[in-house]
Image 1 (cartoon, rainbow, N blue to C red):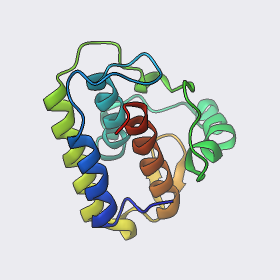
Image 2 (image 1 turned 90 degrees about the vertical axis):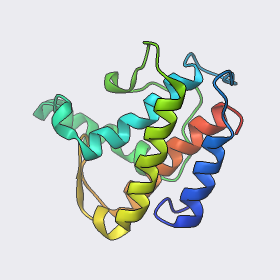
Image 3 (image 1 turned 135 degrees about the vertical axis):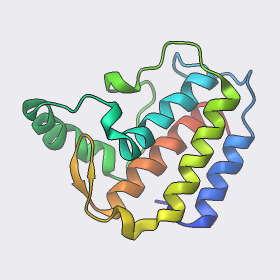
Image 4 (image 1 turned 30 degrees about the vertical axis):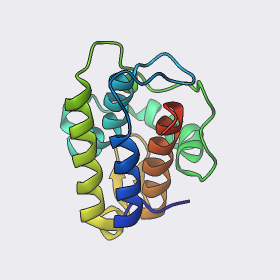
Length: 151
């Protein structure tokens, strides 16, 4: 799996984002391109601003850690049209340029903080993750949705 913490891979992802247009159409799924960018921003918002989200209760966190985590942090690509958590469902109108700018800044911040910052860092839903698990989760989510919009 490519390493989102490297400048080369971060720049590659940013280049792909910059190839999106406000009228880009998905090859699968219901989200438009602005909603997809907002959806991708949720991972970063939960990481950097967890106080803005309702924490999962003990029972839900147990389910997430034991049933969902392995699917999210492994290297296997996500399936098309997979289910997502409620916080990630974006149905309202979003501003393409604003969401794009936020996502690019989130990617840059993550790369600049680096893998060491993320090693054993607490994840909103899954508890402590290794830097490798953070990488897999962040990179494959971005790659999945950029592929959805054919960039």
